[in-house]
Image (cartoon, rainbow, N blue to C red; front, top):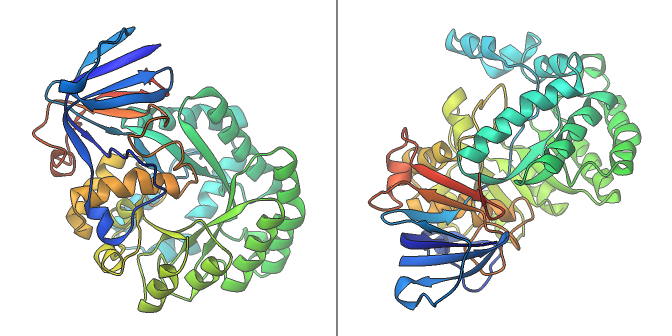
Length: 411
């Protein structure tokens, strides 16, 4: 199957030479071709260039993109979209003045989701989760990382990871699975942290490895959740099963967690609403990418990741949605990039780099996703007619997507 897209107003994120990620001042550069064409063969990008150089070729389908922008689909490297029910009541509780910590202490938060998940069948969880996945695909997401972490029991975590595996088998979107058993301490282990970590290491991990259910391992490294020492135990255990770390850290407090993550070669450190100068220096000399989750900051009114400070220091940055029932009940990456521009003072070029090539790096797929490069997967957003790609974050409440192509097919 050969599909030709013609008369593209702007073909953006064009990378003739493959790159893994962009950092610092490079993030302000977004290569593009005006008045372009792009050829898809089966599920891959085969060729692209200026319309004036379009050769005579036979194709099965032609898409006229006059006045439209074409770019890679979003790579959302941090989500929790497999869950049961919702936490609407907590939304109202926060409006009425309760803090995240107060809600958690009343049995809400992660433990609330865990209770619902363990009471819900695997089939029902799949049916709820596939609707969310279909929604984000229609909003332009072509690759997504999905975490467990709402089971907090052996069977609950396995149930979540099996649902993620089933989604991966049934949908064309690229999916990476992350084991997040260390999301919170179950009530029965509140005073016995080492006991629960023993369950994660000795019971959950061997079964997850046996069924090949995870690509990465995660923990909520935060005051009141998992300490540095506890998280290091989990990262070490993950390594034995070939699971690289992707860690929640610095959401509410900075407790030198980033240093521990870098020491253990974590692929990404996610949240970073609170970042110290020492954290930035440690990240400078690493392959670990920071991931910001601006719609979480928006929804629960916490500080935004200090993007400008980090980029000015030469760091890379990825953007992700954090789609989850409690603190970010949205996987709309178009809103994520707009919020990063509006609230974090990132430029349109920087946010598109952060949500495409850097997002791909943060989930280990930058060789196949995240840019317009020959041989990469044909995962593309075709916008409606717009004046320029600047309109994507500018018109933050408008759906500017006309078509989404994943694995070479319009969805």
